[in-house]
Image (cartoon, rainbow, N blue to C red; front, top):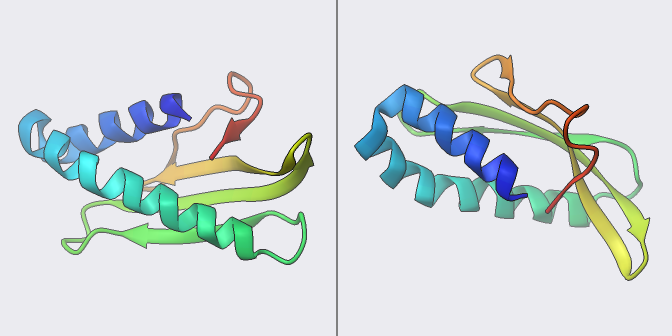
Length: 100
């Protein structure tokens, strides 16, 4: 999960610059990921679902994909894809399961 946050912050800083991007990233990353976790919680099955997010100025366009699956202590919420401004930024070969 921290790896996904780091990747998103890096991409946001590339769009807005280091100082302004850091500030924006600390606000929108938790908001987007928190909202996506709610989407996964409400999903009726373990099928992959996706949700689209965009900043007000339309400089950041994020599409998160994921699914919920049964884990040892209930459901696990798994990110299966992360598209940032039309670029896939999550290499699933390196990260088998990104949990929310």
